[in-house]
Amino acid sequence: MATVSFLLQEPYKKSQNPDKELAKIENQVIKNEIKERKSLKKNYDVYLNHRETRIYLFLIVDRNNKIKIKTDETILPKYWDFSNQLVKPNYIGVGEFNSRLLNLKANVLENYRRIINDNPGITFNKIANKIIDLIKNSHTPVITKSNLNQYIKDYIKDLESGRILTPKGEKFKNGTIKNYNGFSTQFDLYQEKIKTQLDFDDIDMVFYYDFIDFFNNKNYSINTVGRMIKNIKTIVRSARDKGITNNIEVERKKFKVLKAESNQIYLTENEIAKIYELDLADKPLLDESRDIFIIGVRLAQRFSDYSKLNKDKIRKIDKNAYVIDIIQEKGGALVTIPMHWQTKEILKKYNYSLPKVYEQKVNKRIKKVGGLAEINESVIYEKIEGGKKVQYTSPKHDLITTHTARRTGATLMYLAGIPTIDIMKLTGHTTEREFLKYIKVSKEETAKNLIDHAYFNQ
Image (cartoon, rainbow, N blue to C red; front, side):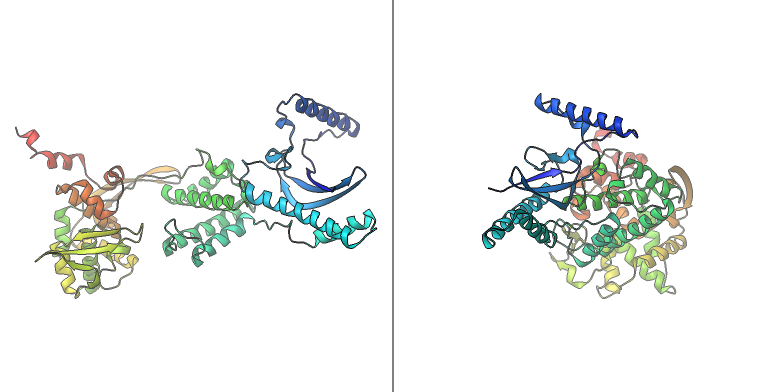
C-alpha cells in the first residue's frame, strides 16, 4: 500500500568551510551529533537551518519505488514537526498551511490509485511521470504569496471597498483611509531613501529605529510618527492572521507606538463670552464659523458630530426643555445632550439646521475670530519634533481649532461642578482616567473650585 511522506530539502545547517573535504567531514559530525541527540531525546534545534527550505513530498510504493515531488511550500525548520511531518502549532497560519499539505497528500494518493486502476500492468516509471505531470498542472500545492508592498496596497483597497470592517461591522471612515494612504506614501519615500524594497521579514527592530529616524530628520511630531508605527503594526498583524507572514517582531515591547500628551488649550467662560458676543455682521464667513464653534463647545462633541446638527436631532422632553440626540461617528454611541441657551439662540438663527462648512475652513477662520475677540494671552507649549523637545510661544487665538471646542466644553462642565460620570456620558469617554487626562484644568483652577467646599469652611 502506497504512503506519503513530507521531508525538508535542507533541514539542518551545513558547513561553510570552503575546503570541500573538510566541509564533508564537518557535515558528517553535525549529522552524528543530531542522531545522538535524537536517540537521547535531547534538543537539537541549534543545528537547524536558519533559512526557509523547500518541502518535498515522497510517494512511497515500496522500498525500491519512490516518487519525489517538489512542492511550492517552504518553511523554517524550527516550525517543522519532524515526527508528524506537518507544521507545528506555534506557526502563525498553521491551520491553512497544514490543510494545503494534507490536501496535496490526498490528491497524490487519489491520483496514484486512479492511475493503477485505469492502467493494469503500467510500469512504475510511467506511473511516476503521470503523477508528476498531474501535480505540476494542479493548483492544489500552489500558494500565492503577497509581498509587503503589494499587501499594503491591497489592504487599503479592502478598507475602501468595505471588505475590511471595524470590530462593530462598519466601514472605516474616510479619515482612517486617508491616514493609511498617507502612510503608504511615506513608506514608499522611506524605501526610496534606503534604496531597498522591504518585505515582511525586514520589519524588525532595526527597521523600527531607522523608520523613526527617517521621520525625525523631517521634523515630524511624535504623534505623527506614532501613527506610522501603528499602521505598520496593524498591516503586519493582518497579514500574519492570513498566514502570509510569521513576523512577530512587531509584538516586541520595544516596537511601541510613540505618543505624546496633547498640548491643546481650552477657553474660559469669559473667553467664550467674548467670542459669542463679537459683532461679525459684516463678516458672514467668520460669523458662520464662530456659531459652529460655539455649538461645538456647548455640545462637547467632535466636529464630525456637531457640524451636522439639524432639526431631526432635536427633541423636546419637557415643557421648556430640549435635548439633542447624536450618534457619535467614532464608536457609534448614542448621546443625549441638554440644549444650552447659546445653542438654542444660534440654532434659531439657522432655522435649526447648521450650514455645511468644511472643518479646515472653520479651523482657519476661528483663529481670526479669536484674534478679533482679543484672546491674546501668550501660551508656552512643548512639542517633540525630530526626536527633540521644542518649546514654542504663541498667542492663544492661534492655537484654537475645532477640537478646542470639544475640550473646552468638557472642561467647563467639569469646572461648573457637573459630576464626571455625567460629562463622560456626553463626551463618550469610557474611563474616568482618560477623561481627566483629556480636560485641561490647572492646579489654581482646581483650588478655586474647591475654595467654597464645606471642608474648607467649617
